[in-house]
Image 1 (cartoon, rainbow, N blue to C red):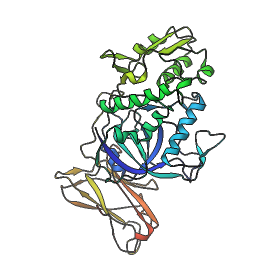
Image 2 (spheres, one colour; image 1 turned 180 degrees about the horizontal axis):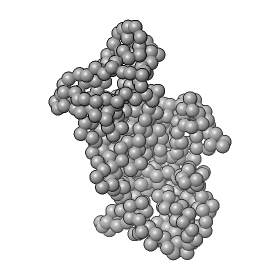
Image 3 (cartoon, one colour; image 1 turned 45 degrees about the horizontal axis):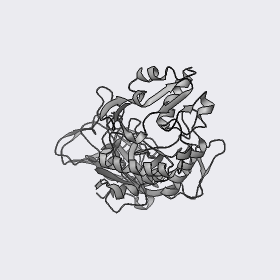
Image 4 (cartoon, rainbow, N blue to C red; image 1 turned 120 degrees about the horizontal axis):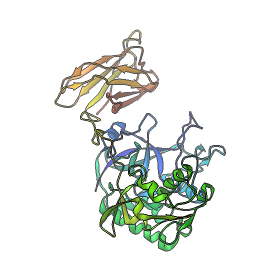
Length: 417
């Protein structure tokens, strides 16, 4: 059960864009990795590259599903949805978090806009998010190292703590190792037996069907979130009862009728096999921990492995942001190919924090360095800057940053490796 360690910071607010920041909920939070290039090297089981930029990437917490604070202009029961969100932020170390009244999913103020933390991840999901176990504070290990995850370690994650408090439902995908799945199922079952968190209000489950007459009624219910995310578009399509729900699910086996493995039966199935609906009544016939969900399949031809030239194969080793004399046309960035083979730079580019882009051409021989002279498209800041190397698909191969105190006229900055 090996996972990749990524060190970084959890982020809930952008000081420069306070009304356009992240929208944390009970199972998703923004994460700014210290080494973004490591994200590009993760498996992409649904064929989707990581949706990462200079502000970070969203982390989707492994094994849990929180009530929706926002989904397709609607939401689930807000008491439970907000309770999971608030506890997640507390566990990560955020305090005095306040949300905008007219933008209730965006943070207006907090004692911290970001806090240090780390994640243990084994890949990217179909929405370009990191699938991970989240932890407050720094890890003693080196960034990018492999960490063996067992029961005691997973119990310290925010994922397991939310399950133990009964604030989230379980949602086990095939990427979750069997031993961890069994362990976390027991954690969730214990919370259900204690009738804590959302469990006393849970409905549309093996204990009883829910009555859903319209969307406004659905918004007040506590139901397994994936089922909620299927019911919302069903109602939006104009259906007024659940007599056609089974056929509607079956009509789209990719986006609606998720492929499952039914653990008690030891057989494959689909979502329609664990949902029963008729009239105004709907329910799961099996508890969520009793089936395994297959990740979204990759589109034909989409790569599920990292690119052949992976993050860290070509690195930025030096930069000259303040050359002697005029800066324009004399600034340089030096690249080094760490692999034994020749790397074709066609379609690659250097970008900076201001959005500038310097297209690259030519090749770098294995083990060789290339000094790139910049033009007006990319201007390195003398007060500090970020330099990003991207490949022809837009994937980040390497990223470095420097501060003003390292900039001296005519001197090249060397980035330690």
